[in-house]
Image 1: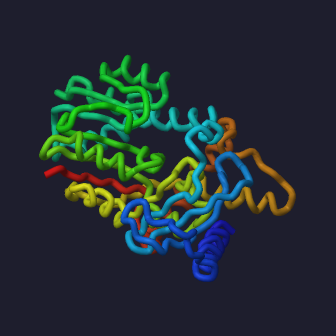
Image 2: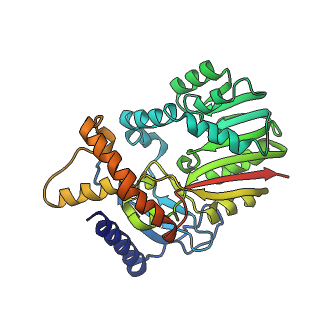
Image 3: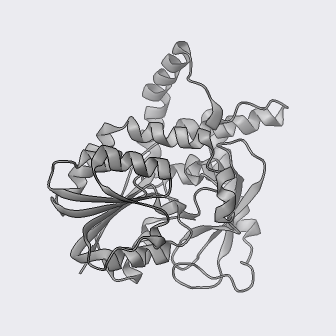
Length: 330
């Protein structure tokens, strides 16, 4: 049942792309490469919160960048960054020490000390992982409460506000990091240009974003958990991320995709729609309580059996769900 549902999703999406690819509104050009002729790529609602409003994604045929057409204004975003969403993100960051170790290890071949700026540093878990290792730490964070916590736990200098409002001098940093934040930004080209300005010669920009051309994205289409509409304003492929970085003078040191599966969440979105079709509205994923012990046991069994098989077959459909890239300023 799960496999056939996922297959129908991708077939429906592909048919929609082929049959109803619409020309972009007059004057709309790609925010990255400036080419015209973008096409409507897919439509989807905010499945995390179980809402019905549909959003439209456009895709550039030249550089493959995908973006949210007519995105909500910043003043409207509070409705979409709910307390439930914040709790999910905080839990993911605080409960993932292995994640921060892996990112420290990925950084080590390029830089082991110096001035480091973390864009969207949240409560400072990554910055804290670098304490006492020869780094001078800085962060930028929109949430005043999270910025205070990041400063307290890491000792970093944290700017509270928008990235483009921060007034760091050119050539200030040896490393700038940006983990699962770049897809949320309204003006990614301006931000990456500022990154290039802030980096010292030889400095690196280490960035992680979801991969819109991943196996899961291709299989699940509008049900892919990584869409996160309308919070994710831009969706990157390896090609579009490379193009954007190189357009501001950065060179590519490393760019790869890695498996970061959340098949269970995508499947839940499929099942939510199937139940809705027969008149049953389930609790949206954002508001779920902690699962019971029997349910957690069943979920674990599914992960080590069915999902393990699906992950083994995933490379046949596309790359990993997360893009890990390191760019250098010459």
